[in-house]
Image 1 (cartoon, rainbow, N blue to C red):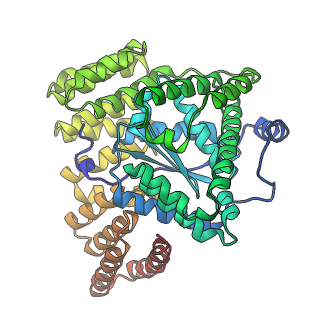
Image 2: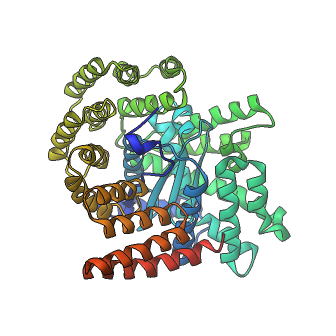
Length: 490
């Protein structure tokens, strides 16, 4: 399913969230977390903190990942994912750790967490999880791994110098996430071969701890903790059906009858004081994922969505997306507009209509719809990107100004820098265009080529006498050299 014109490129549109700033006005969060410390057995000491080196290695891993693994390019679904993580974060023991998300273009069931606050999900997780609670349970589990610093602690247990071991673990995770399966896990364990048996047992304890933290996170965030039980039961059934070829998630997070029983017992003891029900929005995002997975036969996406008894409006939404893909633009827009009037709080609906207009090359309509949405929610990234790309076809100078703002707000968004480089070139800002291209290259793991682009940008800025740009280039060159040093660990 094609998204946003240039979104057929491989690179990720990523949104950075600050967990400590979300729902900061909720005075009960600190009290709940204090209670959780006494209720949950934990392997982590209170002195454990995420080191700058972990964050640095995590960012290097992310760049390597972008360079080697195709991403699912869907800003609307991605915005939903980040919103869900923001909802879970205050209850997750992450503290001030910033979470970044990445979506993998794969139909297989998988999710993973990487030191430094990176959480990844496959498109296949949306397809497998029948409801938002089940989907959230996997995210809560992965956030448990991050909050308890399992990879760093595992590396420290394996050797005195944890950073080389951590780099080895990250390299193994990269292989596993890119579909290397057992080879990836072998590489992950290879850096700790001297204590392999002990480390495997320790990993089981980590899984149990992430389950316990994740269950409490779910309950405190308003989700039925039984959702994790349902998800584990479904995964266990899948593992039994698939035998020796289970999905990636079950290679890294094996589900056993004992683990399922333990989770069920703990879930039964938890209470949820303020239950959430956002089934329609999740069903719509699940429909988008299914349509992406079944792009060659969209009706299969409708069939699979209907199997889980979704909200009827989610089916109508998916059918409208299919109309748009079949060239029935007017019918699709009419259906989207009806749904938007019925559900005025769902930004995904008017954003989807703007997306449909853009894909049909109705650029003025796409700009108008995006502007209307942005008047209500000024920093809504999916609408910002739609409007910027549509403006690129109408007014490159306006697109350049808008994309400068977007990349300042979202400096970890490769696609926005790709667009900015295009807009800069079309509007005569050649030096800024080379700088934007350099940022795009370093974000996607090609730092040496990015440094070459910085040199070109510097020469152009000198010719133009642009001291502001020269200062920015010098600053970014220092950062690029640090990125390259971190990447050398892999």
